[in-house]
Length: 467
Ligand code: BES
Ligand code: MN
Image (cartoon, rainbow, N blue to C red):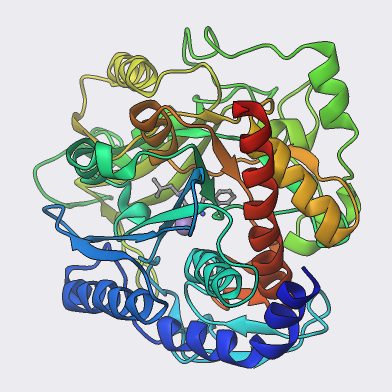
């Protein structure tokens, strides 16, 4: 076991960083059609890389959209199987001007939170750096102790656009993907000195709403006062979606929200949280939490609503007196167990329709959604993750609820009937989806080591419970 640690933290340190940087140089932006070939090149790069690690099987699976990469590493003995899920696609880089370095030319720099250095690049944390830890762990295990468990990998190219084709791929390859546990590193932890395991993620409903008033932009002096302004209607409707207690006003919206037991709430209250530091880090003076709930509860176990974008009218230099013909906005709702995205979407659309005055015409478009997710904390896989973190980070992990979404998890869990463990090593401050995204080198290396140790504990726990 000492050899395993030394291999990862010392011997392979440089090589594993170089390999991650090579992967980060490929601009695999899934949402932008201009990058289609780069996304495919990234899948091919992974296939070649995984082949070089000595996989028993590697394949690029067509999905109809961006392909997924599948691989299989077989242990030398009868062993349980761990399926690793990750995504090699990344978010767009804009606003490019706010990056200190080009997003696809990774650089290592020290920061206050990462005194040992962090790799800066789009995808460094979400998710290339995080799934690369699994490949490095496999390589390390193969070169030291041997693989305790069989390992399968599915690394997709469409997570950032809502995994529209992955359910079909999973359905088609269900037998091939069969596993005893699903391990995912695509979440954050509280810190290396306060290890945590994510036990809940939120679901998602995403809509775009487009309003049209007059058939063309009008002179606001000539027509203003007689003709409805669609931007005004849109703003009024959006403003009314939340009340003065920061509760969403849509009737029935909270009906299926799970109420937590006192025990669960206590657990959440025990999660270390420094409100002042939280506010300072994002530059706000006062938070806007739902009445009766703490900030951690509001992002973890309560649903939320956000306007992701809004446009219309004149936004250029100077003043233009116009009464615009059109206005539009993108709205998203984060959901918690046991809210159903289809049901919530129907409620939201119904409510929006009822709010719409006769003075405008409108169109509502729905984008990807996803179910919320909860981890089974009684599974061998979860317990093995706890043991692994105790060993490598010196403390038992704190269970946390995170506000982001990985919609495919509930699909994977259902089709494969295996427990999912979310063992992520990112930090909230890593700026995923933002300019200057980065991933701490220490997080990368200790994460790799923890994953490798997980495989040993999972093997032991599964062997004992099947004896
Ligand atoms: N890795 C994130 C999800 C995440 C972020 C989990 C932070 C926990 C903490 C993932 O890549 C992501 O960004 N998901 C999207 C959803 C998707 C449908 C676009 C999200 O949460 O907005
Ligand atoms: Mn993401």
